[in-house]
View: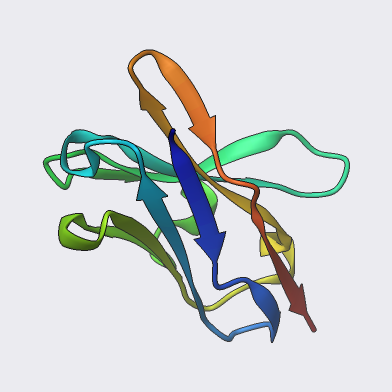
Length: 115
């Protein structure tokens, strides 16, 4: 059974930071490509950042320079460090991976940025 469990969300003020974590089980994490998506109310779910098994990363333009994705293979965990948070970063953040041709998602963690 594959599980992805996010944590670390919360309510912060604009300009502050949060670090999200996604702990996984049931996959060979060290070879899995891991992604973070987010979905704001009334909007589609969009890719925020992704990291491949070789450590290469890509980011949405809206978060470049502010967010950093990284992974700890020993802990089977992927992180999203979010700095200089903006009101528009408010959303539910989801961890995602594709394993043996199936997409898996966590339940999400809420990030709310206030002014």
